Image (cartoon, rainbow, N blue to C red; front, side, top):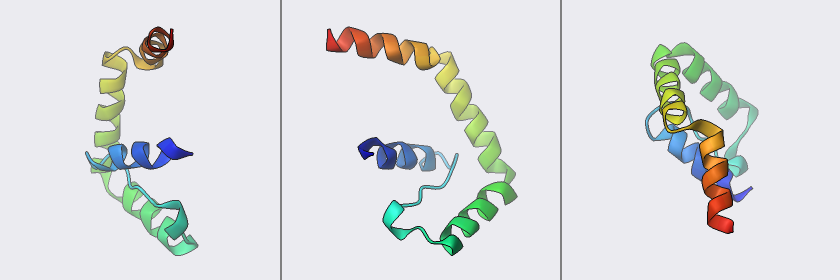
Length: 72
């Protein structure tokens, strides 16, 4: 999916997650990324803050409404 890289990089930018390019993922790189994210509480804190910002902006419903208005 074309948007997966964009979303992955946007999550990685504020250090709320780790982006792994699909073509470069191995069991070792995946294991390392999981250990990194689960072992560093700052990822959880940043992911929670990112989620809160999405909810404050209206969440999925707001996106859906804007998208529908755009394509009409």
